[in-house]
Image (tube, rainbow, N blue to C red):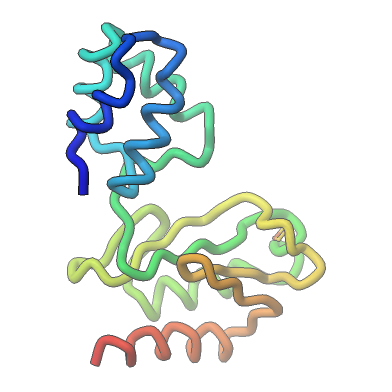
Length: 153
Ligand code: FES
């Protein structure tokens, strides 16, 4: 696993135009943008950290917190909302003991409420890492999360 310096070395010509590419590389390598990484990138590009946070928060795919081994994304979009996704979210919170943007103490689960996940016709929808689960019910959510817990027994 390369460290942050190795990522920065890929951009020998220090140009602020590289900011997004550098942040994407950092997130792809570490899973999120840590405060330490933001400060180092800022020093490298001679940009204030406030500018970097401003740019990174504009693009919704950047994260500032680490993820769990099983990162759960659940749709909080309006179509899923009509299909009672709030009950689904409460069930996920209950089963994993994490709330939005949190990670369990053992690092297994993290939760992220997202905007539309582009499968509105099959909502409510959630994903665990890259695997999608659609037409969710409370019972189905419980089974899905329990199946991931069992993988760790
Ligand atoms: S609103 Fe949930 S998938 Fe579109």
